[in-house]
Length: 313
Image (cartoon, rainbow, N blue to C red; front, top):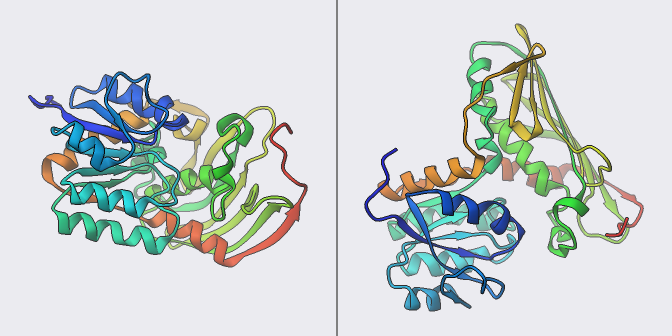
């Protein structure tokens, strides 16, 4: 794509691990976007203006045109409303909010303000997802099996917000569900779930889901946030014409054991490209399908209590 003459002046709201690991290097590499500021108390090293609120930053940086929200999900309605009232476009890190009811209002707010909104699902932009989706077209899907196993101590060290109600293992698990809802052409529903809660935490550390879709004969998902050793993020799809496996969170695709060529680029690079396109057109992309599956898993989930969780493990 040809870069615009004036890159979108964007600010990060929240500068934690995901912002530093993914958002900052992606923005730095994208000619369509430039980092113009940050709303954070931990961003003095970024070389851009910082402030305690979006309004204060807008006053300091009048050319500010957009924000990218990287805070924990609780409290995002106020941030999005403040940004839209200031005439800013909004991009939101997953999950979009703390509740479905909260998230459902975001698209309406953005349309009423006439600004772009992008509720992102970064794993949908993994390199193997679109090649697999195209390969599945016209094939009968017999079974989809998700295995998403990672160690919270590695990926969210000491981050207590991850154990707030409604999060836990579904912070990574929703990534798998975002891919699933992209791959299957028909809606997905939760039929049953078992959620394993540490004795000292308000969110599950593991879960098993049974799901259904008219596009597949059987769909299962196994999630763990206590995986020691090798980390596993795979989606296996059995069809009437072979087996496909997404490996490494979707970064690699094999079909019948052979590697398939996938596009170059990064997940977050594709997210920011999409956001720039939405800003140019003033459009809204606010799909909540993965979030609904998580909410349904909590509604239907049978609770078990497991050993207390300790960060030092």
